[in-house]
Amino acid sequence: MESAHETWQKALGELQTQVSRVNYNTWLRNSHGVSCDNGVFIVGTRSAFVAEWLTKRLRSLVKKTLTHVVGYDTEVEFVVRDKLPPQRRPQLQSALADGGVSTRARVEAPDSRFTFDNFVVGSCNRLACATALEIAENSPSSFNPLYLYSGTGQGKTHLLQAIGHAARLSGRQVLYITAERFTDEFVLAVRQKRVEEFSSKFRALSLLLFDDIQFLANKRQTLQCFYHIFDELHQKDCQIAVAGDRHPRDMHMLGDKLRSRLESGMVACIQPPECETRLCFLEARAAEADSCIPADALWILAQEVRGNMRQLEGALVYLAAQARLTGDDINAQSVNNLLTTISSTGDTGAIVHEVADSFDVPMEELLGKKRDRKTALARHVAMYLLRTETSCSLSEIGRQLGNRDHATVLHGHNRISVELKQNPKLSKKVARIRERLAQDKGL
Image (tube, rainbow, N blue to C red; front, side, top):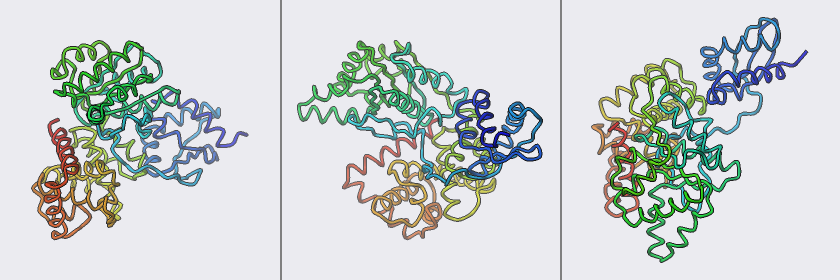
């Protein structure tokens, strides 16, 4: 007789053709056959949340598939049991943070956290994802250039990075760069009289991924440089993918030539996610972080947090961090408490998440007791923004940031108020955080 492992591998082979790639990779890929006794097949998973999700969503399909594989009627149960010692899981960070990753032009590797496997596909983004897959697999594709646009936090950056990650695995020369980084490096090149050297960095590329093109608006020299690079690469059949916050026809500050070039290929819009996609996104992120969050709590979040994926993820990360620090379980009541706080004082969760993401500090450390320089600065910035952007009292801010007293919050607020006047780099970073928070509220 076959072992449970061998039987399950055959079942997985069939299941892989019956469910979406995202669902397979999220819920089934790391599962394994444990045993098969008395007509009951036991499947091991890595967390109670995954076991619960599979039981509720895929049990009937898995049962049907196993019955076909073994040749007789069988039941299926999902249990928590790791086949291998637990691997270090990534921190639950923003995977849809448009413009949040400042990749220097000399760094050709896109962020490997952002892949097609962990991109949640729904009716809101299906066309954008399909065209992104096409250009990742074919060079050049029939969609050249590809232009993706949406409001902030809907997944443009994730798709660009996913394209780059997949293309790089196939040996292509790939560069992901934001408009902000492109501008900074171009200005430096002009000052050093090395513009030709700067432009030459792009000539060997087979794939250029350019993010947040709207930030080139009104930068005449930078726009001219980018247009020449774009035109040269396009003539060489280099695949180009660009992301922005509006349709090219609405970006008059980019100039007619560049807008015409962007509209000449495939233009795909990513719409705000509907409730079903929001729920799938939350389920996938919770499973990725191994967070045991009841289905009813996720459903409440999916229904009530409607702005964009970044706001949705900010609420989830904040809840998970608070639960780990306090030891309390996440349930429908804790979700309702968070939503009450958000509606009465502003989106505190989004602010704290945005600060943590911007400073690259894990949420648990931001809310915890760690006091190194980087973490302390991020925590003080969070205090400052919660004080200036919401109606929270000092005591309320302290509770939101790990139960700190009002004097600590006041000290943090005052420190950042002074430093913003003396530190242009910090001032720019805080302004960028505010800008992204304002974009979130505008959706």
